[in-house]
Length: 65
Image: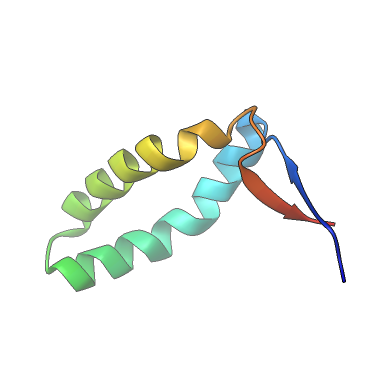
């Protein structure tokens, strides 16, 4: 069975992570909530700031090794 290790993310890693996941997530939020892309973007930024910001420099995101 592979081991899972938690590692802190750097600011650069977090930025890359958000760049990859934000566009499809925003599109899905806009469609699901029947709102504009701008409203969905604002919601996504607020949600990710609240939930994911602790991932930077803390072992909160799973890294499969």
